[in-house]
Amino acid sequence: MPADRLAAPLPLQEHRRLAVFAGEWSGEETVFASRWTEGEAATSHVKARMALNGIYLIQDSQQMRDGKESFATHGVFTYDREDRHYKLFWHDSLGYYAPAPASGGWTGKVLTLVRGSLRGNARHVYEVIDDDSYTIKIQFSPDAEGWSDVLTGVYRRVL
Image 1 (cartoon, rainbow, N blue to C red):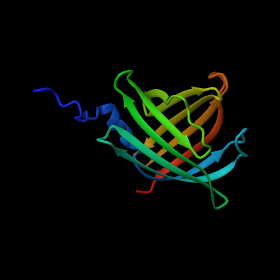
Image 2 (image 1 turned 180 degrees about the horizontal axis):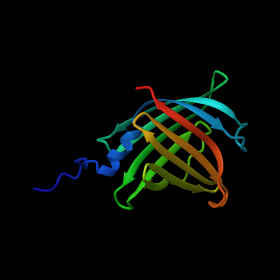
Image 3 (image 1 turned 60 degrees about the vertical axis):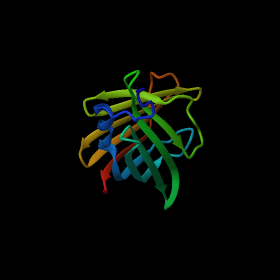
């Protein structure tokens, strides 16, 4: 009898590691002045869940400034079994879609993902502090060498 090609693969330990970011989070952010926005403090609400047989972490965030939504994101994280790197497919309310996902890996409690495009390079650095908090740093570089902070944040578990 032929193998069932539509059977979903079981998640690997690498997929399960992303569950550390699953949950509902409240964040305090610093948005740095850039070509996209003025710099100032913001708050953020993040909801993330493991989905599709535990293969993906789906994360949605809503940033607020002055009582209004100023920025929103939709991220899909996974582990690529073939190239053995973590991937981040990032969509945001600025409407830009990267031609390829960010790619990277864990070093200790830090997940670093980098993507390049014609606009430049973005680096997302997630650091797990403990079961109930993590930090993020999003940086930009035109040449992937000199990095400038775009956003930093500290997130605490709500649920």
